[in-house]
Length: 429
Image (tube, rainbow, N blue to C red; front, side, top):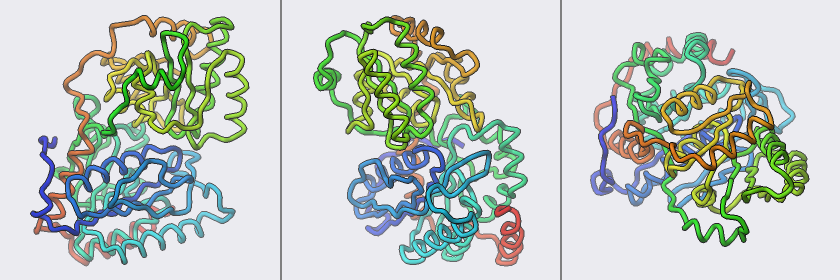
């Protein structure tokens, strides 16, 4: 199912106390937090008087500006080390203790905040099953519970195997009212590829890609801030930056091959999650070629919009922003730990939306040649009307509809007890 376009909702139809709680585990970067932040912002704009409480695992808290009506609670951070494998990021405690901490914080928050809506990003049971107590609590209270999934999770084989082993299909059928897919069926049929259409049927809703709706400053203003002496600008960025060092180091090595005086200005935005020692190494390399390095900029979209070429990875939010801005991008996908980025880069390149250099073909010389070629290219990005970019607004509108709905599809208590016993055993393994 694909959403039709919806106008802003009138709060008078839903009261002035619509409450949404969100969960984003963010075990590697900022992608889950960015999506939920954008949807939360749309909801409080569409429904004056509403409130959103975000439960987030990002180690630096919410790095995005939040308007009135939205606040967050930081839960202990974790880091993804392999498919469905996480470790505590900072606390020197075991996984069982970290799970108990996270589960208790989430459940107590839900108990007191009493949301009508709960939006979970990506992980149906949470990390280590830390959402199970909260799912039971909110289902008993007849809250509407929604799972949000990005367009590409991993390879179909890996994802189907994980979902079967962790019993996610049955868990979603039992506890979740709907599943939002933040993508377009014409680009990647998420539901079909991962067996969701067969298992979950009418719960599936395609929203389109979730993009920031922030306005951009004029390119001239940004270029004036940078005191540019050359005509062309390259911006190198990779979201939160936790795993951005290899990409940025490769770019700087490629820049060296172009001579001491680069034929363009270059700005590297490392992101807040890059390790300080890596940032220092980049600053040393950048000084050799006259490039600039910043941890963060106040308005990253405006800097990307001012660029003649953006070099980035193939994360969901990075490429959604590229599509929204209609900018030329040279994309270098992350090799792993999942097939998400390489799959997305391949699909987007096939549609003429980006250019890409894949890990197996990456070298300083290849990258230098591709950068100079892309600066001169005018044949991409190609217009693609099938790529819809209003996912945040559509998701928020549907959440408001769910909050106002009177009918609830609750499984029987006996069915939930049976599922609870089985899921506790499976999802926490």
